[in-house]
Length: 277
Ligand SMILES: Cc1cc2nc3c(=O)[nH]c(=O)nc-3n(C[C@H](O)[C@H](O)[C@H](O)COP(=O)(O)OP(=O)(O)OC[C@H]3O[C@@H](n4cnc5c(N)ncnc54)[C@H](O)[C@@H]3O)c2cc1C
Image 1 (cartoon, rainbow, N blue to C red):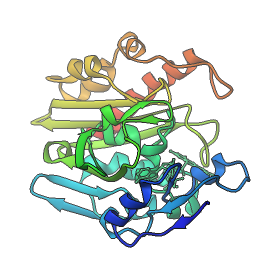
Image 2 (tube, helix red, strand yellow):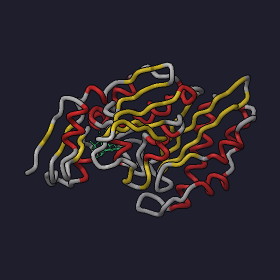
Image 3 (tube, rainbow, N blue to C red):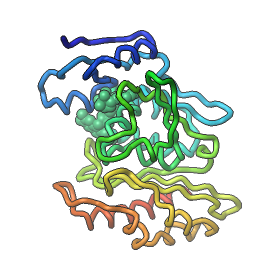
């Protein structure tokens, strides 16, 4: 028998998820379109109203973003400049209806290579907190998304929150997305950068590229090359060959692989220039 559950607590949700074939529903903006007009098969557990999965809060050790935080809530929050990239991404996820319903947790758990929330969070060294029958566990976001539409969630687990460590809140950030048109578009490539500057010199660079490999990626070699440079030289120091070596884009109906790589290089240079301006 299929049932629709709306638990009152996280504990109740985890108990409900123990049944076979139960699906998690947050905003539904990925789940329902994927069903292509058909009714969702099996049982559904609606977590969107769970108090434990709401809210954005600043703590001594960093910032906590509840998994069911919507894009609208994110873009309207008062956040440090290191999260400007995430807020810019929030403003570009679909249109207002999608931003009002879609959640950051749904974006991560859906694990699309084109998920706009992933590069800004990677650039902040985000960690995810997951709850399941065995209790709570944490892992780096880079380890959570394991492939296209694949995550490290075990059966019966729910993503509870995204945590940005205090060090990930340092610096300024920028997000740029290229699609076939300006709005309501799946990214051909998107980048997020976070740059920490002391006395005019780059002391830390975190660069992430999405839609140009099966999973969005950080660029450690490119990042290292920027450290120690005066800010005015940083954008131009991004080597196309080093970016290309870190990506593995595909040819598809949206763009050929070579175009995605070139786009990623251009977007990274522009985003670094914006972040240090
Ligand atoms: C018209 C349209 C435009 C869009 N534009 C964009 C865009 O520009 N950029 C972009 O990145 N995305 C876009 N999307 C995709 C979607 O809106 C986002 O990925 C959104 O953030 C998904 O969140 P949700 O809460 O709706 O997820 P849901 O659809 O509720 O869930 C998505 C998946 O994650 C699972 N899930 C959700 N939350 C949790 C949780 N806390 N724990 C465990 N599993 C969970 C669900 O079971 C499901 O498998 C668009 C979608 C539409 C329909």
